[in-house]
Length: 227
Image (cartoon, rainbow, N blue to C red; front, side):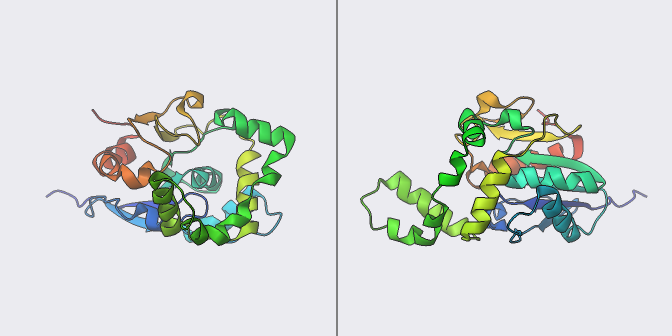
């Protein structure tokens, strides 16, 4: 008699300020996987990534689980992995080291330009709809309005700074990196050793969900894309 398959618990961490709603179209076979969704917590003003990661692991209730993080969430799950025993660590539309960040981020790190980012505008996004913007920009604004859960300037300032000053230099052994070749936030020319999603953008977890639904089960189980 065939033994029942042990359920694999998969925890998803969204990108900066985003809600777990970005994963709303992701489907994994329920007889194999159970999906769990992590939510951002407001950090202390000068809280370190390590301290924040230690708070987030309190939301993980299973050993030998899978962590999947998007963008800044990908950095967070890497920090969380230091304190957990995992089956698989997967990042999407993110970076494995500071060397994979684009030049503008590295420049901002050196010059302190990140301090000038107008993070306060998140509280006024609805006013942009009345401006004579192109249809593409307005569609993106609606997308951000739909999925952006935290509109707290202090949180955004903290998130940008932690992203820019993340200091990892060597990728975590066994990490799986999924990246779109049209990502303009983290251009693929700076990314190495990843599974490439053709025409995938920084928001591909939303608009390329069919690719993920087709390929994530094998990537989780095997650690690689199965042709």
